[in-house]
Length: 457
Ligand code: ATP
Image (cartoon, rainbow, N blue to C red):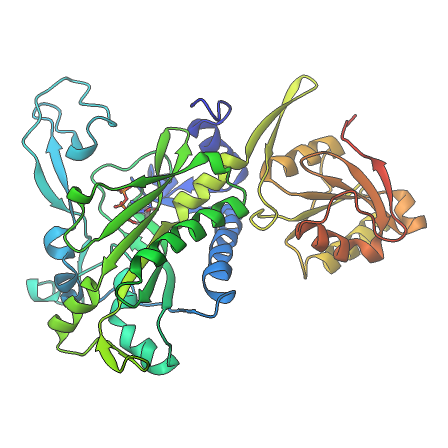
């Protein structure tokens, strides 16, 4: 619980996720696997929408960006050159009596051992998961599950440059799984051992990096707001210059007000030419850029916005969550932005009679080719509305016996509970326009407002 969002707790979010099929513990029937989660039928739709919103904004709607997808398993020399083998570690401390382990740098946030025992001195614990490539399990075959996707972009810098003839500045973007053997996980899907990242390496001419850093910080903040996060729930945490890693010129976290407090949702790093230079030196390949205008070769500088899909999704869920008094009960609403809502429209026939079902199913089949749509004919209409509210469906379409006569349906908006009655022929176009920002009460030809503000019987 916190001041700004008193109704949202992690308990409420995780229990809604469990109840409605967004997120389940991994391998739950065997007691779960610590730090691993499974996305259920609605969770996967939400996750795909978050990823698509990022991909559209970062790749498809831009001239200066390309996407790639690189393998999770990479040559071990990659991690040697990038510095991960030596330095990708967190300080580990252990309680001498109960043997519980903690991250030394987060001790103030974490509960100290309940037993009150003494802690060991800190030692560095490397977070990379190891495995073997091929059938022989010896030291020469050790490889790692990637702890970030970024190195896939750096080692492919020249491949992309040669095949796309890009000019600076340009970026390479990627989405994919990463793995970190975190000392402590927790806060639901906030910190897990297997997670997904969306990262972008933006290659710029040295000297223009500060300007681009500012640009990406603002661009990334705006992306969250555009898709439903409240601006006052976002903040920028500048890392102290003295504590930056040796290659980083500047690092800012975009933090979000999660139920447990402010924490990082995305990191923005100015990485200079560190990664490309390291890989050029270690591989013996030239990884630089020829500037046509200045007739010089140089190694570009890099600005990197890196976000965890699961952490972004959790932030979107927290800010969507709302409760309203509703007769004797509480109406729980996920006010997802329509672009992220796992289901955009629900078709709700008022009766299961065959003639109405067939009619409603035809509307459903027509709509679902353009919009993620659910068909639901179980229980009372009130309960069906509540279920759709709780999973964040922006529009419910009610089909009644009158619809058979006048070829119109009633559309109800989730947030205001306002209702309009519109011709079926206009339904798809009208819903698509409203998803795109059109006022709900704007009517297509032949439409009428049934209820401008919601009060449901
Ligand atoms: P933290 O210190 O919170 O563990 P980090 O600073 O190590 O995170 P980065 O290396 O900057 O994280 O990774 C970029 C992004 O990837 C983070 O902003 C976060 O959204 C996501 N991320 C990193 N580690 C995890 C994890 N264990 N579980 C879920 N998401 C993660």
